[in-house]
Image (cartoon, rainbow over all chains, first blue to last red; front, side, top):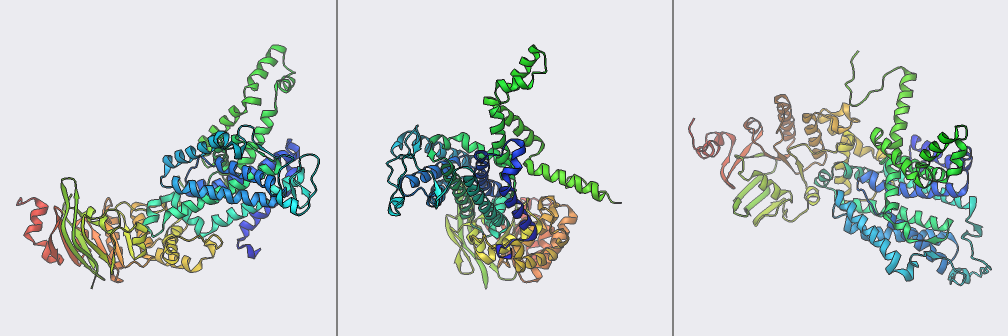
Length: 383
Length: 251
């Protein structure tokens, strides 16, 4: 693996990541998540969060508008299906490039400011994109209905290669392989591995070191002879490309694109995922997105009937009281659970789930080796 | 041959003439101190060297290039490194990384996307950084996160970060401000060591102990103009200087 230019630890990390992606269905089966729709979401939002983390985790610039690039990726991919071909390769390449292109424009303007002003500028741009997609640009985005495939779409490239038109709407495909079900998952999973590897490379490179220096002390960095603007812009464009790719993949697994994908709640979601898992860590964003998407699916699927059933061992009055109370936190109200979880994480584990993992690991190591862990905020006792 | 030439520099803020026709020359290889009472214009003058302020009139030439209108990173790239009043370091990064960053800046220029190479494998940059950390006696804590250092050690680290770039001119803005006596003396020793390697330094300082231990030449600034210039012995007994510092009162 020397040609990948990574050390032993990173190699193991990468192999672990690949194994988890491959065995995803088996791992998720026992906890009720072993179906392609959910696992696809893990992979797609994992890609989105990995990219977001390159901007937010490394440079510290908190963008509140990355859903705009996700939406642009989806629209681009659907247009590629409509105009060119049902093959997914051009769709995701174009989605990635267009995501990056729009990130270049928005980043160029927004990065003139930092801190809260940067966040507000990105939020404003994303809301602008949302409103454009929702109303003004209806010819391109098909407004509130959303952009969909149609039977009489041009599909020029497919026509050139003599692909036969189906009676119903065609499926997205990879050289004849339908991109639905498990095929779709493994396609997204493969790209998640590639995305993870690229992020790993950036983290370990001098370029990544400069991005971390931006977060640590941008003022010092400029007096150290480095032009900070292109560094932040590069990080912004890279994260925009990841978002575009994720948006494209959303369209690959389900070929329609709606404006709601660009709304600020969607931008907020990726921020939550990244912080939840651990901003600035390699694995954190992936874990954060998987946990949030898992809870979204599991908790929101509970309804009153299931709850009443679960509390059926209680006397009738209590049963209903319990079902009503718990009902607030599941189904439609699952965001309440997410909010509580998020508060817990931010208060007790500011470094996200990854910090929790590190703490457990150091506890475990100290109990086996019998030496106390050295904590940075406590003086080390001399024996 | 002077490495830095300041000619007829004027700067006015509203009704205040902060710099009044300042002329200054810094010889290569010397330690030049700029002293003066509060509000004399020392910081304003420094800000004109580093791209923060543009003087209303006058020239600031460094090694044949004008520094006026240049951005901070461009000024660093022509060979001017700067130490701040409060040490400015990368607090979240390790000491080694802190010193490697300026070294990358000298090698790769102001911007380069080298995402394929690995920091780990940059042996020459790493060795250079370690050598500098050894010079400032911080090599043992190369993997420590920089924000945990004491004030004096942060200053040492900052000096290592500047020196790794082999600057043609090192600007020091009150390098011992807010330091305990022991730290101050350590810093003076370190600066003497650096000066003995022939690096040109310009020091802006309040503390006369520091100034007279280090400086080979002193310029005295008062009310925005240079009122005296010369060797330390000459400055000590200069009547104008005593007047500027003591307000004409005789003790």
